[in-house]
Image 1 (cartoon, rainbow, N blue to C red):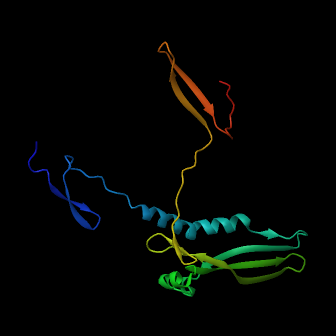
Image 2 (image 1 turned 30 degrees about the horizontal axis):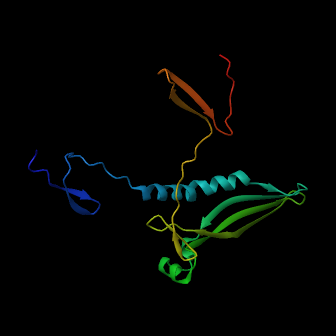
Length: 177
């Protein structure tokens, strides 16, 4: 048995003593960074994609067309700081303003305006949201995708058998060879 197994190991910002036989410690991934990167993608690209998907919107007669041209998240117009939101049971959010262009096809008139779409919750530095004064976190879930699950079974004689179960919404493609 090794006499000198005790050694200091970096654990976050602190140092702790390790008694393990393994010398290499796996680095813990920064899971909060995954949430923050996802939120940044949503702000930078996701919102733009959503507005592009629904734009332009035409009225039932086809005479008017509404197009979303740009948007801004006004971080300078936040009503309360994070601690104030917690004290006042408020949501830590910023106004989302969208530039729209209304085109009248009958008169060839174009009106451009900036409209208020709503308050968009802002993510804190710790990867959480403050909603109605309560700090909330998004929990990612792995959804079981439809498909086929295989299992190996053993019969009394000792032979192996393979069984397959198709889940709901499984789509079977062309099976011809």
